[in-house]
Length: 176
Image (cartoon, rainbow, N blue to C red; front, side, top):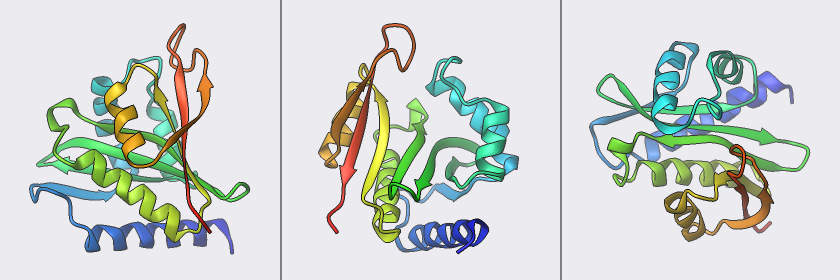
């Protein structure tokens, strides 16, 4: 199977999830990211990450247009309020959450949980063995949510988020 066919199939799988699992609140609109979403992604990154950690324009354009990543964006009216970027790894049969963010004004509304449920569903559908993510050790709210979903710490990432800002590599394993 070629890479472009793989990506088309992953897009179809994500779209199928959208239609069978609506967002928790009807005023949110979910879609797959396109290059036209890059300015909104950059704007949301300013609220969620320090500039040292942000992907930036060139990285987002590559992830959306050329890589095997699937990026899902959620809008409230005309404002991007959340995104999820997934990178499948065929070699080790894992799906990596490259980035996930929810604007602070829209947290605790079920959006982050919905995005993680999407990632878990797609990992299972694509027969992945593991779902991976990295999280700042100081982000207790996110770490607790991941633990509630069954993620376990698999590694300490020293200085991953900057000098003396350590991270955890977390993994959710699926049974065959």
